[in-house]
Image 1 (cartoon, rainbow, N blue to C red):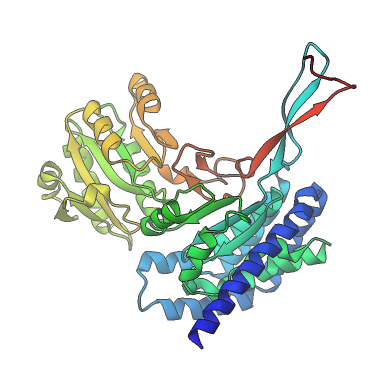
Image 2: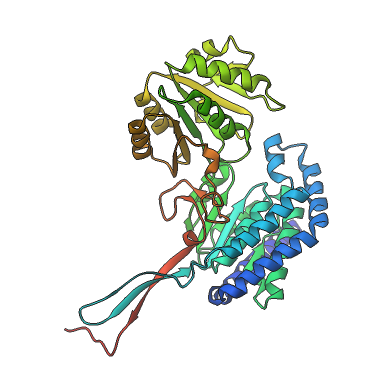
Length: 431
C-alpha cells in the first residue's frame, strides 16, 4: 500500500508540473491589464477569507510549536494584520510596470536589419521553501506578474495555510479567464518528492530555494535545472573609529531587533578598538534591558572584557559563532584593530548577502562599497533594508547571494530572460 501511495504521489506531482508547463504560454501572452486584474482579485479574496486563513494558520502554528524555534514560529504565523499586508502587497505589485515585452536595447545594422532584445518570461519557476506561508503569495504573485507559471512546494508545517493562500491565487486566475493551473501548490508532504521535483529539468526552467543552509545545499547539489539560491545571510556591521556612535547604536539596534527572523538581520558586529569601550558600554546596557527583547551577545575576548561591566547577557564566542546566521536574539561581536581587519573578517566569514559600515569617513565608506563582495553593501544604514519592496522592486522571489543570473532581491525583471527580435526586408547573408 505504501508503495502504491508513493507512486500515486509521484504521478500527481508530475501531473501538476506538466499542467503548469501547459498553462505557462497563456500567462506569458497575457496583457498587463489581465495580470493586474488577477492581482486585485486575489487581494480581495485574501481579505474576504482572512478569518479562514488565520484559523487554518493557527492550526499549523499549534502543531508546529512543539518542534520549531520561536523564530521559525514567527515566520510561520499569520495574523489579520499580516493577511491584510499580503493583500496590500498584491495591489502594490499591480502598480509596477510589466517587464514582459520591454525592449532592452535595439540597433540597426549597416545592411538595414533591425535587431532588438526583448524581455520574455522564463517559463516555469519552481520554489522549495520552509515555514513562511507568505512566500506562497509572494512567489506565486510575482511569477504571475512576470508571466511565469509557478510550482510551489512549501514546508509541511504550513500546509493548511498554503492551501488556502494558493487557492486564492488560483481562483483569481480563473475569475479573470486565465488558467488556474499556472499556479501549482504541491500538497504532498513526502520529502522524497523534493528530489523528484529537482529532476524535472524538462519542465522547470528555474528553481529557487528559500530556507536554511541545509535545504539550499541540497537544491544546489541535486537540481538538474538552473538554480538561483539565497536567503542565508551572515550579515555584518562594522563600527569604524570615525563613526557617529549615537547613529551606530540606532542602526545596529534596528538591524538586529526590528525583526530577528529574517535573512538580512544583523548577525555580527565588528567594532574598532578606539570606540569599542564607549560603544559596547552603551549597547550592552541597551540590549540588556531595553524593552522585552534583550539580546544575547557571543563576544570575543576583547569585547567580552569590555562588556563585563554592563548588565548584558554575554557569553564567550565559540568557534562557529562568527559563521552563524542566528535568526534569533543573538549576535556575535568582536573588536578589531582597524578597517583592514574588519574587511578581512567580512571577506572570510561573509555569506555575500548584506554588509554595512558606520563611519563619517567618506573615503572609508567608498572603500567599503568598492571592496566588500556582497549583494548589498551599506554605508550608515541598517541591513534590514535589503528587501525587494524597500528597493522599489515590489515583491521578490528571494534574495540571491550568487552572481548569476540575479544578485540581491529578485524582482520582476530578474524573472525574465530575453530573446533577439530581428526584422528584415528580404535580407540574405552574403556567401
